[in-house]
Image (cartoon, rainbow over all chains, first blue to last red; front, side, top):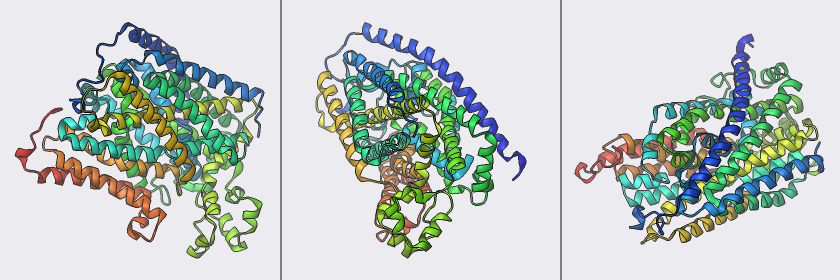
Amino acid sequence: MKADLHLPWLLLAVAVVGWYSTVTVWVAIKGAADIRDMVKRLDEEQPKDSAARPDDPAAK
Amino acid sequence: MNFSWPIDGAIIGVYLLATMIAGVWLRRRVRRVEDFLVAGREMNLHLGIASLAATEFGVITCMYAAQGGYTSGFAGALPGICQAVAMLVIGWTGFCVNRLRESEAMTLPELFERRFGKTVRWLSGVVIVLGGLLNMGVFLKIGGQFLCLVTGLSLEHLVLIMTALLVMVVIYTVLGGMLSVLVTDFLQFVVMSVGLLVVTVMILVQVGWGRLVETVQKHHGAAGFEPLAADGLGVSFVVMQVLMGIAATLTWQTVISRVFAAKDAATGRKIFTRTSFFFVCRWFIPGLWGVAALAILGWQPLRELSAGERAALPPAVVQKIEASPVGQPLKLLSAEEKGALPSATRDRLNEASLNAMPRFLGAFLPIGLMGLLIAAMLAADMSTDASYMLGWGSVIYNDILAPFRRRPWPHARAIRWNRCIIALIGVYLFVFGLLYTPEGNVWSYLALTGAIYLSSMSVQLVACCYWPRANSWGALAAIVLGAVVPVLHLASERAPGLWPWFASLSKDQAGILAFAMATAGMVVGSLLKPRDAAPATALM
């Protein structure tokens, strides 16, 4: 085997563990804020129409 | 097995309780059918990343990616690299996805109707659901198989585990639709990611990178590092992965439903670019686990058989199976020897490479970490099942049932129908999962069943967005031709005498042929239809 054959895979392993750890922490913090905002917006909205998808071509 | 009910069971119990509470919490906010199917289009970037990542990593992903690592070495991670590049480029350029989100559609067929008419919408819906349901039909069984092997429970407990998993997922998906799915996805992403990372670091530390490299070199040679090396995965596998990466990013319902649910097109694109590298992780991490399983357990397919099944095999057959290449236990057997094997024995031997990773983890992980791993895998599985049920259910409601809705349905009725559809998909999953065992490599089965619709839908989408000459004749031809090849190939696997030519194709070759046929159908069909009958409308 060429000695360097595994090197790209080693670099990829380091990148995967480093990137994934960072993103997990980042998304865990920011995603919770997104859920709070989404729920807030949904609570503020009132149903504007009584029928589903009036623009739905199949419903016309 | 290092599974302790008080410690590992408690970790799993806490996770399941938290998931159910989160899933049921949002049910009262589901007022409109848009809330149920696309979360009212209120999803922001980070929630989108968590949801897409959690959805696209299930136990099934972990199992087939680990099987890829076990049978092909590091090169087995190639599909993830292809999809990551496709997603990055598509997210970066906005290719097709800008128009998808700006269309305000909820499903692809709804978009196609604006360009190709009602028949194409309906038929597209049927093909999407057919391919999607065949695809996810094996999820539960393989998920249950993983859990049984890791915990040491017997495979007879599979039905109980499958039922319990399914009931929990159906409850919160039926009640809260996409809103519940997004929130549970978030929770599941965090649990799943922590579990994946901890187990991976532990493998790297305890097994060691050097040993993993040696194992790949010993069992796979250069092909374990280079997909295109002699005896490697081969050109057809690589070409199929490139096509699948592009098509899945553009048209896989559970992927693009995140674009439809995004606040706007820019958010949809950012979800793609920033999640793209996850698709490398989703293949590479389980792939490493598969290589570690090979390093520690070796290739022993006969271990899958009971003592009685082993004793029933002729000595010459036993020798050939023991000497077989990794992942291909029947390769050295003659046609007569294969034919003489009981089908249950053949199925068990074929599953040896699939079962290696969970067997390895069951013995490798200590108490405590075992609970974390199982919680992570349950999280992965539940998020995938929930999103897939919602994804295919949305197509059934929005597109296949569209001709039966002459007037707009009240929201309450529409939501009730969606809930019934999801419950029925749950029943289908349970029944199909018990009855069907895919032959050979699971990923190739998934790719082929996915190709039933990925080929024609991706061709239709690109033509719909960018080719003014595309029309309904081309779309119909693409749908039919794109579906024919994979369906005939799947049928010929079960009855090889029916269509010998199809049976002689590999799954990858059949998948590539499906893409080629769909493209030819779109081009020829569109050119055959008189120009004045096909005005270029919408999206252009």
